[in-house]
Length: 148
Length: 148
DNA sequence: CAATGATAGTTAGCGTGCTAATAATAACTG
DNA sequence: CAGTTATTATTAGCACGCTAACTATCATTG
Image 1 (cartoon, protein in one colour):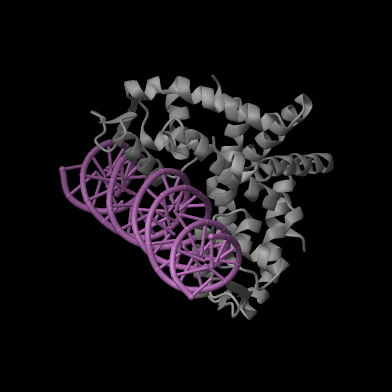
Image 2 (cartoon, rainbow over the protein chains, first blue to last red):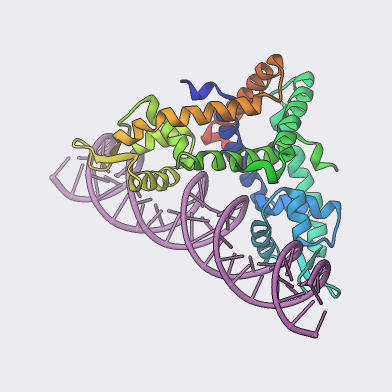
């Protein structure tokens, strides 16, 4: 059997390569990959609970917790306890968390453009469309029916 | 700016979701994701040096080293020192390393079919083609010219 | 209102990826 | 052939993803 000719194998290779590539580029603005995925969500809406962030990003809560600890250390976000629910916390962007957005967008556009330069206009559209389908496939799977 | 509408962001989401999905499926045959990528390469050709495996798979040598240590522990491969070069080692599949192949192929076909069931015949071909382009983009970048 | 169950965050521990730094050996060069 | 350079494997240490297990709190229900 030729594993190399499967979409799954291709996806795996592309996945790690893409992540490694992003990591290198983000180093220029002092960010890590995981931090960026959280920032994307916080830039959309501030002051949410960790569990809500995690669900939206599609990561496990311990993963988000660890990433947030790192972000608090470098001063990108603050963690505030809720008054009406002592279990939960709200995550707020600091001034630095807001300020870094411009630089990140620059890098992001560069990365996107460099990657897309390999493709024609039509291919870009199709690639986006097909990847969206793959994403929906994974995030559409009901977690309760995932296991056996 | 809408990060969600970039291919890079889509790729990131799909990347982690796909890897997590693979990991769950592979648990059924007692394998981890990294081990599988090494197995793919060893099934193609046995008895290669770690550095050659790493280059072919597209991983850093310390990463491959760690994965191999785990595989030796569970008895999938053996590590042999070269006689004519005391620095290098050769990695050989054990009987178990060969034997597991059938079960892995079954799982692999399942995963592939389930994912592809979302797509038409034409879309599958295009998806494979576009992902191949992305892979070539990342692995075609000359490491010497990567930096600034 | 006491007991039970659900929820939020955290800790511990593992596998996978990286870079930087070491040690040992091979290869090359003056 | 002595000294430098290059190569191979390894170690240490970090980020990121997961599950399992724990604590604290809230909600529900007897």
